Amino acid sequence: MEQHICGDNLGNVVNAKIVNIHHSNHDKRLLVPAQRHTLHNLISDIENYGELTDWQVWLKLHATLGVSSINEITISQFEKAYNFLIDELNASKERRACNVLIHMLLVEINKNSNLKDCMNCYCKKQFGTANLKQLTKIQLQAVLSYVEEQATMQQTQSINMINQLSNLIKYNKQPVAIIAIVSFALGAIIF
Image (cartoon, rainbow, N blue to C red; front, side):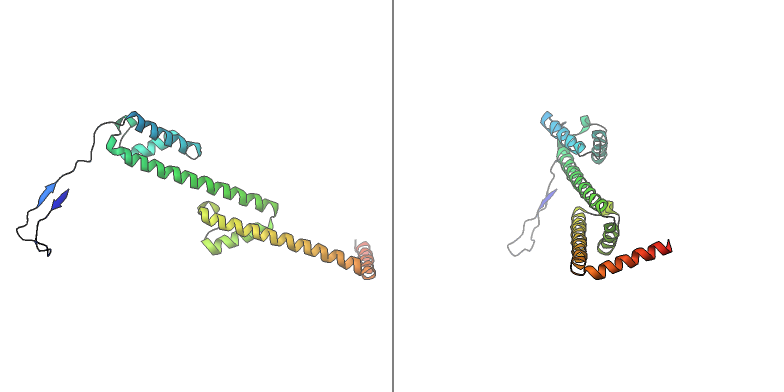
């Protein structure tokens, strides 16, 4: 509904004349084949992400539009249906990306079991939960970056420790040999 009010240039209304104009945005014609095809393609794309079947997406769409089948969707409802399906497609893409990141985190943690506690502590401090399914894509990216950084640091530390041990043995052969013999002798006596 649109109203036109006539007045002077100063914004004062003198001899106001209000005209109500009603717009009809309710085109009752059914979808044309191209529109139906567009909706079917979007639903197929959503189904390809694997979270929902096409039937489940159709049910959600019908509930949103207040219809019981595609045969009841009108041209005026097409934009709402299209926007709904685009939102569902974007949400499916986001969930897929999150699942891939979670998989990458689990692979990294399986390589080094010490990282799980570090990751859980980091998640609780930063995001208030250690449940990876509750985190957003950006949060999961931050966690993956943290875990990879921790893994690199642990690898560097273990390599440094091995180098220090080999240098100790290389440059201090007599004390190392004495410690090894004493340790062997004590082990033989105790066990």
